[in-house]
Image 1 (tube, one colour):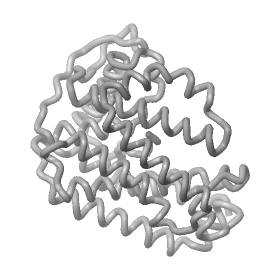
Image 2 (cartoon, one colour; image 1 turned 120 degrees about the horizontal axis):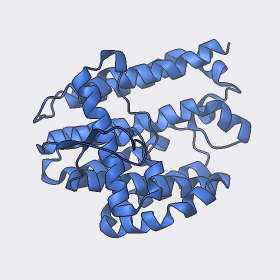
Image 3 (cartoon, helix red, strand yellow; image 1 turned 30 degrees about the vertical axis):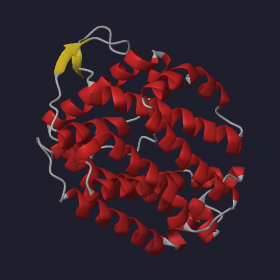
Length: 283
């Protein structure tokens, strides 16, 4: 994925920081177990959050052991033991990474080497979870059509990635999926797509790559976008925050939810503010 779903660390309890890192390592171990060692480099922080919320909603407790790993060979550290959930999320991470790189190859002629390196792992993930692969492929196909049409509608362009997140969550949650979980992950998908477009704004403008925010506002720099359209951006992101909050409060969590709550109510707004702040500093 993209790596934006992170906690606000100063407000994260020590127990939740330990859990977050253990879940991250658990997904890494899971990727190695089913996709091979090389695709482990594709792991993003988003999947640690996904592991936290998925285990909680499904009511599956996390078993944590102290172990060594490739990155930490000297000192043992808490690592979540791979289970059915982390294995599925690990495969989902590889599928998303491979198809994102495929999209980059098609649109920008970059990422071909990295894609080829994880191709074998992707095939293994696809074979184990064909429905998730189908969801992501369909979403990127729709997104590519909108990009080729050079669409300037923010809601329309965000929709395919929002549907990817919504449908992947539904596939993972199975009978525990509700309208609130679907709406929550739809909103998360919209936020991820837009925050990535915001973060990459100057780079996309310089390279002439598709960026829906540029199409919508036609500003030649990120600082110009932020300073001239801050009210519009505030309105858009505030709406997403509201959708996340309203749906999250209706979702039943089976265990302590401090980590998930931190990411959704503090981490996401903080990441958004930090990226927007870069625009004001460039003025």
